[in-house]
Length: 583
Image (cartoon, rainbow, N blue to C red; front, top):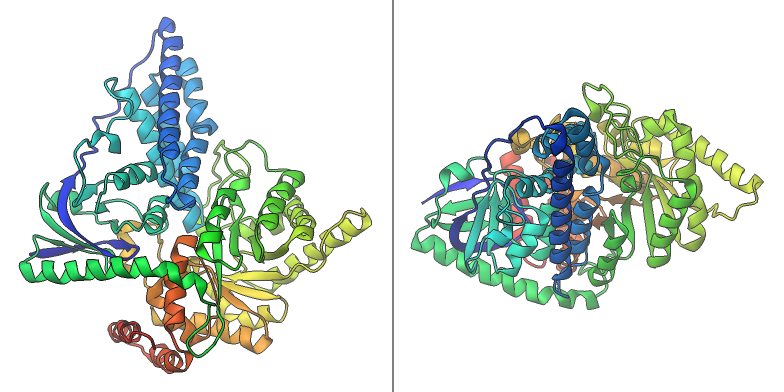
């Protein structure tokens, strides 16, 4: 019996046997075409895209009614990528002008697109390269083999999957859905990170999963007995009888808990000592709105607007943005926090065509509010659209990547200009839209008291805050082990921001992954957080944890944890605070 460790996705335990999913592919062929072969090669390429589109739509159409609403949205993202010019059009140009075969043309252009995503500063958006790679793999597999529609896809596995644990290089959202239909118990991949679409989907579907386990394919053999503990990120290989008995009991307990979670929707969200807490949803696409009702979210704490600007040749017009924001605001009863554009100058905003600018460290470059302040012609139309749409709902504007009080003041000055312009033009708009800032840079956390005097609310973006504080790239699997939300410096920065909000009398929310992880719920309550924003699929478990917590119990423990300087001891305290049951 021995174990391996990766990044656990979601909660729960799976006990079963390994099924090695061989996704190895031979080298991409390259050859020049004769003039007479060009049209046939273009037809072969367009046919491959059509087959992939048909298969993805088939997967989407066969989703059960019980599937989380965001499931279909992930397939939509892959379908949209099939229309991206870099994937769908530019390879055809290469086939025609350079006379190269379809596989080589697709590889060259997809490499460019993946390199672009590697350069994007926002960790969440950067993981989209996995979606690109998965879509390209599907097209490539059709091109490379003619005996099956999409080789190496989940439909190639024709055996029953009850009690089987998939071990693979990667699993796409579409494959995860099909494998789940066949009662796959869990999956383990050598690639991937905690904020990829596949990871989010695994949480939504309740699939125990572990990603980023680099050595898994060279260590685990087909048929090995496995225990997957998604909570800890551990895989136990060939467990003994005692381990099997222990984890099977945990698996049963988790299943029972999940069946009881639906009952928490009937309870108001407050702690056992009657402290109210607000739970909001993070959304990206309009389709995500369907998940809000089932989750019990009080509104939207983070609406990412970047995808309005991507997979297109020109930035969206003010009117197009206005319509998009109106749709969301009319669909949501509570507040909708709209984050202004968070892309960098490493991309020509608005283009599916990728022309990266040279930035040695794009995560630290001209991005988010820095880009918007340098390009008011990009910033102002978005603000105008938000203020106009706010007539139809409770809009809030959230400015990302603030690092100085000067940026806050410059942003507020532009906002005043936009409001004055709308008033002069006699265009209906709301002048009561709260303006807030994301705290995701250590400089912003340290200066939170200054920001709080100027802004209406703050929201802690833990994904970037942890990355910048610990000087790591969260998407780089080789340094994932350094990513620690419980690092003492991270906790102190969070406490600094919460204290600044209390002192100024403004709300402070948290919208990063930490907010949706029940491992941290009681600690955050003890530190003073009362507004959590997360993926809709995470909400019921967090809600249950809040209902079982007592502020008067967790506050002193949070103070002890905050004063702790030993990382190992700190993690032990966290286990203690979470093991207390209703506290």
